[in-house]
Image (cartoon, rainbow, N blue to C red; front, side, top):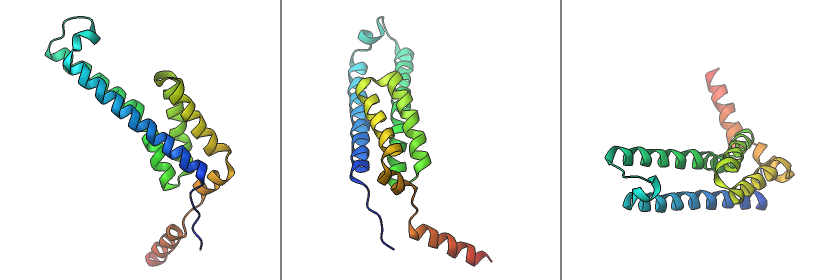
Length: 144
């Protein structure tokens, strides 16, 4: 059975999402470095040790909150899981429009529209590999 190649536009979506994730990780890392050097500039008052830990935890939580849905969407595209891809892209779009800004929101919207409306991408994500079905058949046969 012939394996289907990843459609070009779906590969573009995966690359755009990867660039977005890398951009967010680098920008938050730079922000954490600057914040650790001069936390008073961001807090607006004198910061002691416990406040610095609380601020750092809040920033790290935001990083995880913003990056995880996009990262999971990339993984689901690679694993060819249509429903999970749509779910994580929808969550990332909602979070992106509320928190991240226009550019990342547009990237998420483009990715979601490609997955939902581009027929070859949809077929690629919904199609199962022949190896998966053969493995399931062999497993069922060995149980009986």
